[in-house]
Image 1: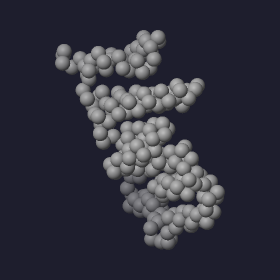
Image 2: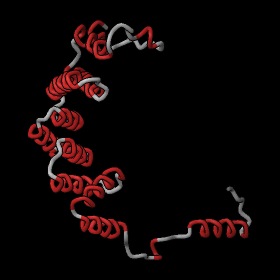
Image 3: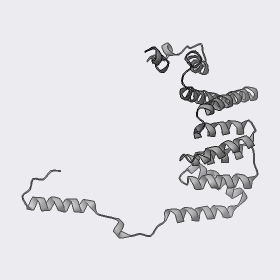
Length: 220
């Protein structure tokens, strides 16, 4: 049992009893990690959540200095998380966002390249991050438009990506809007084949009628 203690934790139903109200959320998460030294995988996930905590907190920072310090803290935690989870796409994506907001566009691009290379089914999110970072650093309009077009092509159902692409296109290349509309029509249009559609209700009703004629018991 002693060996398993590091893997166990009592969860109190009352948050005031389970979390020290005088400690920050980051301190509350970090304390058990420092005391119990959990396995690398668990520690890496905890570092990811700590990074997310500082990343979210940075958006509410009252001044630029506090915001930058929170972003630097988030980056440090994400870096630690990557040591234990080197193939974590969300960690790479979040770290890329932080690096981009800190002004390191080259590092952000490399991190997103690593995330895209994983091919974990979340490519649309990584491409969207690249497009948003381009907006944030006021990249040339043509470059931003190209990134948003790639993001839109990866997830055409993403309304916000479509809106961002259309707004940029109207400013820089109105013809691209027409091309996008035609692309949508082409992707969502197909020849109508009546054989692909079947009236299941009619067939089910005919089976019931036949069973009734044969004196069988009907169950609906």
